[in-house]
Image (tube, rainbow, N blue to C red; front, top):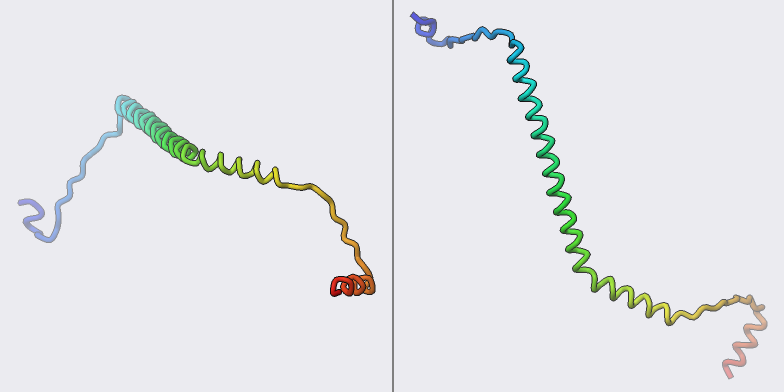
Length: 108
């Protein structure tokens, strides 16, 4: 009679007797591990290339769409430099009596 029939609340557990891996098992584990390592490296390189390509495409699209804006900004900057007059100014502090005399002349 099996043990679970004698004691219905108890589950039967089976333990497998595993032998230590031999040379062939170790070699197979090494080869499988190296295959997974190389596959992961290749996968990460492909993912990096896809992300870099998408980023480059997005940058190129942005650059292409903003070329008219850049050209307009260059022209506006060139026009702004045409209207610049270079000069110097000196601030002279006038005494109060001179200011009042100038203001009297302007009032007349």
